[in-house]
Image (cartoon, rainbow, N blue to C red; front, side):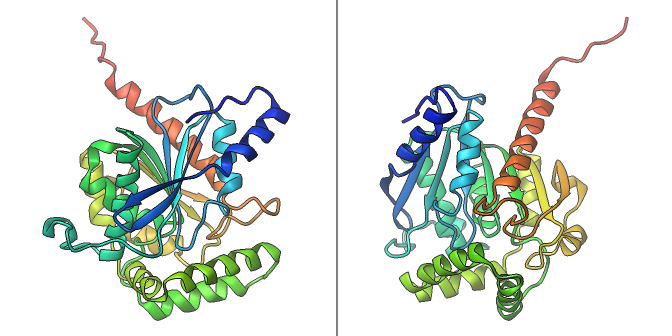
Amino acid sequence: MSHEFPNDTESTNSFETHFVEREYIEVTGGEAEVLDIGPEKENFNIPILLAPGWAGTLELYKSAIKKLVEDNHRVVSLNHPRIGGDMEYMPTEILDGHPHEEVRKAMNLIDILDAKQIDRVDAIAHSEGAINLVIAASIYPERFRNIVLYAPAGLIGEDTFSRLLIDFTKFSLNGIDADKIIIAKKALKYIAQNPVRSFKEVHNIAHSQIHPLLHYLHDKNIGVVIMAAADDTVFPQEKMQEIVKADMIDGFLSVEGDHNDTPGPKHQYMSNAITGAEEMLTKLKTKQDLEKQPRQTNL
């Protein structure tokens, strides 16, 4: 359900009230905790789907979601289930060639759109979310208009589980502060809920290659912009630039920040990145609208 926020004070109070209102929806991966929040009138004619990074929770993305809602967007996101779900019934053509844990999360996204009766979305993905979001869009391209990938996984070429684990640990311990401690605690909780699934997910992240799918999405006229953080040591932009080519995407931006967009005010996880992603969605829509206009010819 959408909610109207009349002024700054009432808007904050209303957001806080409705942010804790969750739905529990059966999806491919189990039972997902889903947030669907937004104003009465949206600037865009379709909602924004936010695909979280590995161990990312709705609480971590709260400030980012608030920013989108304050800018008159309806936002749909989730906490991916940690237990339950059965992949046995999945069609072979979907599972073949894709990492199974990422397919599970990709189908979670589609299942939520189905349950909410949302035909089409713009989407923003962070880190691992880029892998499962791009897989979801490649399976159901008609459900997606434009996509922005911030600090995306799956775009640095051949990788290993050990490299990913070591570099992410180094990043987490570098300049450790209260915010990183909070993130680390949530990650440990995420792992503890299903250690086996967590291990498989990290293995899938390390071995995922999504650039061929970007070609496919581009051919399907889905706008794609990559935002690579200048200080991201987990998925370095230099390696992305070796993999990503101009005919795969509509834009590649090098932006200030690190893997979790931590520069700036504390407790603003991903809010700067979301601001940039929102601007990119606007530009993609404007570009698409212009391309639809008939060309004038000089007689």
